[in-house]
Image 1: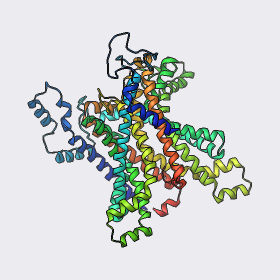
Image 2: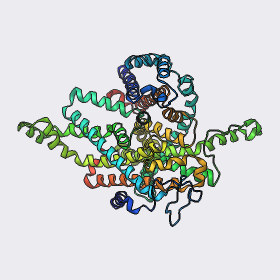
Image 3: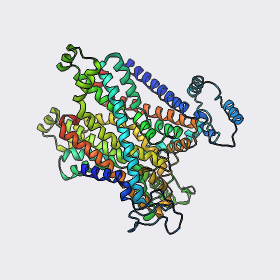
Image 4: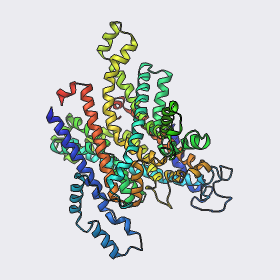
Length: 329
Length: 268
């Protein structure tokens, strides 16, 4: 069994190596390579470029630079941002909490909505509600998130003025101004009102696919013998659904959620851009616009680490929920 | 229904010059011409540079759909080739290739897509190539799975006994068997490609001016003041993307049900 986890760890490290090598090679192959940022400025002469290259160690051959980058990264040094001149790791760590906040909130929304819709659809098969849920999930999966986000901003922020159009918190928000009994609610609402729209936009496609999956997995479980036995023993239907069937229906969902993590991060990039959310995705977009290769490499590798750890967690969770897996692995 | 939509939209895209009421790239800074709401002369209004949105959408459809199709073709070629070789030969090669696919599938490839788009500043063919190169994995896996079981069938053994080459067996004997699967997958791929391209263009890394697609038409609406003043500039191109993607998804689902109910569990 220990062997299994060792194997997983090796795969994880290999994945990280491959993604960093891919990102590095792609940047290297592009016209201008790592120096692309300075290529178009006519005020920067050939001599200046050579000096910059020397300063950043870009004069060495690419494979050597990749190895240097790898060594530094393993030691926790992701280099210096070309945009701001600050350490990349500091920049990322400043933005990471915002991204995680958005993703956690959206994750909770998607999970609860998907499970609720899935259970309803499975227990009311071919009813009006089930068909409606099927249609909605189809719509959600086809919805361009940026367009939907803009519509929401137009409706709720500009027309109705209910929610803020972007940002994470009001800069001059001061909880001390409010009397103590209501203060927690004020703080909660202050955070929630900024989260509501971006989290909804980020959740929709997840709800679409997860709820369908939940429905079919629930139907699979309900048709099994032990459920029939429970029914024959006169266990109330509610208890069958929520106690006997739900746990087993959830296990396959864990895998799907783990597999969906990359698209979750991809969605976060777009969502953060629409709602001016000060997270890692926006940093990535501005770094890409500035061709700041250090930041791009840094974010790619950090995201890959997060996604792979998420997958690993999903695996553990799966083994925990379904003990049969341990023997097979 | 989706088929009727395609006929209409491809017709509009092909004959865009006949339906366009204005020059799609004509810029007018006349204050009377910019940010006009939809009227009889400008069906969908005008944008911040006084360009007619209806005409732009017709020409934008060309780029959006072309990138969608091109991406699909690139993805299918890559996916089928890799999946077929992997599934047909099996063994160590298959193991290594599938581990590689697993790794790519578990990584957020959007970051690589954006890096490529930002550094290479591709034209629309380049964009299709970039999206294609990062989305062939699912197709490869599907084809490989089918090939693994198909190659054990008797007709393959018969073909082998006749001394046919591997290449001939793969292309003429095995591929026709997975054709429905590939076509269903391809329609789905078009939907995803249109969606990804428009997101990329929306972020400013896709189609660059003077070319434009539906996604890049929404790009200017990121400015909140502009969105408030002229919501139609975001509404119409976005609706077109939405309906197009929806129809391709619908179409794929319909094909799947029509051809082979068994496929239901394979493509997810």
